[in-house]
Amino acid sequence: MTMKLVPAAPPFAALIAAMHRVCFKDYWDEKAVRDLLEMPGCYGWVAQDGQQPAGVILCRAAGGEAEVLTIAVLPPWRRHGIGGKLLDAALEAGAKAGAEVMFLEAAANNEAALSLYNTRKFEQVGRRARYYGGTIDALIMRRDL
Image 1 (cartoon, rainbow, N blue to C red):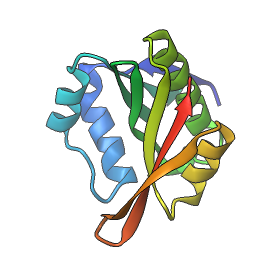
Image 2 (cartoon, rainbow, N blue to C red):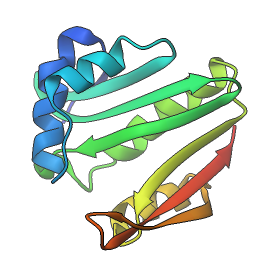
Image 3 (spheres, helix red, strand yellow):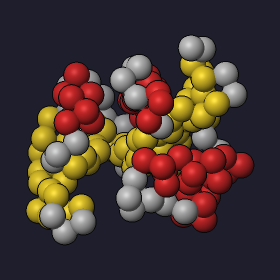
Image 4 (tube, one colour):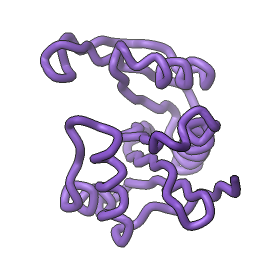
């Protein structure tokens, strides 16, 4: 596996939307992804194994804060450290952009994501009841940069 991270940009909108559709029930379409990528302060990466897409992370930085908007790893590449590489790149870029803290949210039942975030020293600071699908809580997490 030869994994590389390529900066996310508007030309990747269709690819990112397709990955999002595979990974999430409530996915973002191409227009939503393109609009996000064109926003000031938005940054992210597409992980590629050779020419094959493997994962994506999109973030936003503003006002001394950064936020992970989405992180997704396609099923064949899960449990290979790609989510960690994407998150580490996002943390580094957020700090370089002047953010002092990074926020994200995760479904309370997403054990794989919560494990990753815990290894990167994120702490739960809030909870949105029944946020996902009206049944699953969202955990709000933060980490100082």
